Length: 187
Image (cartoon, rainbow, N blue to C red; front, side, top):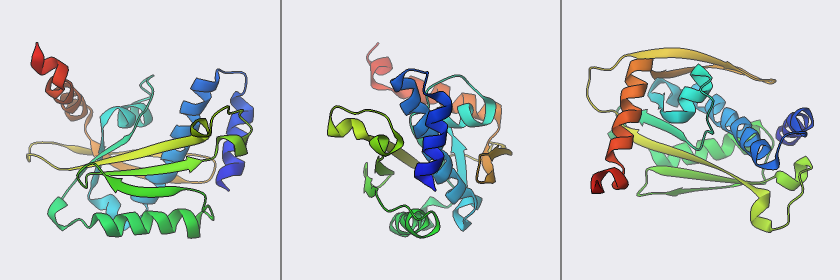
């Protein structure tokens, strides 16, 4: 199912640049991850945030790099169990096994690697060009003064509701993240 859907998406966009197509394909894979999260028990506690949230929920014209979430009750969240369940979703529910998944980043990030580009029809000259990466970054929620809202996402195969921060809270979070980056601290 995944390869067929990505092939269809590639065919609809093949006149665009290969780099842009890679980004679009990555976004399609991100939708599978979001569909899993928000149709699982985890969705109740995952608050979508960051640039990808702004892209998916508000059509912000930007490249989406990773999936960022704040997790309510993070102390009770079991990252290994989440990884196992996400693995099961791709292998059993979606019938797709050609990927790897690992925990990294001080147990705050999950990396998925999909060696899938050549299966879709894009030409690759190096093995590393064949891989699409999805990174999921997790953090605990901070404070209590934030508002949450719901956004809907629909694709060819599914629709789901995403729990996210309100737009003002999303922008405040982005500004805070930018100001905390190392190059800003040096100024």
